[in-house]
Image (cartoon, rainbow, N blue to C red; front, side, top):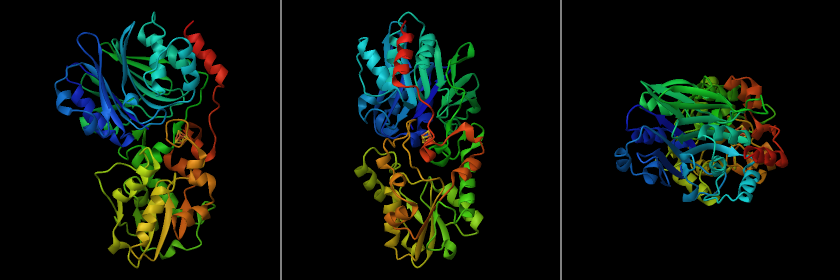
Length: 472
Ligand code: SF4
């Protein structure tokens, strides 16, 4: 996850807009936040801190800052721990001037690249994969920053949606596979780049287009200049999990409304009762109503209710003042977080049978705790419905599921999961229904965490050679 935001503006007050843009992207990362800009002395400035946006950044300080361009970041750690030194943007002043980078994604070959760079004398300030890109720039001191960035990206594998600030302007870049979304918007003569289009709505910015997979886009006073990263791949793989869980429902990614895709997942889930991913030892036909795990399960639950002609009830209440459980970094914090965050309404569950829709089961923590809280309400039955296929494989492209051991569906059958979370029945959406709900061609989507179909990655030695070539 992580959210990135960038502005190139004709006026001097971009910091407040970056703050507001990051506020709309807060769901993509809650561990730290930061903003970077170039000052009148041509030096990079970075302000960042731990926690939610309002905890990490002093808004009144930002309102006094003047700069024509800037970038921002909200972080959820996937490579490198949740520490202040890993907060982003990462900035530096090097031979070619100031530079700052904010990154959403995960570089799959960053350990090999880091080793090559360390052998060339690089001293790293963080354990984040993003710093590798910055160091690759700094190790090409004679090349202009944009050229150095393009060359650096030819040696990088994995997922990156980047906003980069250099003296020549604001740069947006997306990996050749297009794993993570990245949108371009415009208001008057100002240009905006954001992880999701929902950040534009807040600022009255018009969505122009997605940054293309493999595109490097320079934005400055001359307008837009687009370049292509030379790449070994022609495949494009947008993360299907963005539509299931990660993105906000009011975002549009590659022309697809996240809300519509999610609602269709719910409809298809209601139609698919009894398939192979369904354990229906107890029938869901006796259900009195449909409820959801708010907020990420709610849109699919509305689709489920519509298709099944059952009423939708807001029977699980979410405390809005605590963050999303899945993106908290440790299991202990996650478990406590679920209890603080989600509470069933006893009146609605007592002596009634409920369909409970959630978007996914990753570790099973949320489902197990909420089902046990619902049981305490003397409910008749709980039929758990999941609007995505079982997640059986880790993600290497920017989601925190690093080992199969963390994934309950990798170790257990549907029947075992139903038993462990305490549900009377359990069904998952099929992969085919998920893809058709999204509506993009299947070869355009990454589904690796559901089917293990990873992209062929470059082997370690190839990564090293690519990196070495960059500095020749
Ligand atoms: S492995 Fe799953 S979460 Fe990761 S990019 Fe692919 S679809 Fe998205």
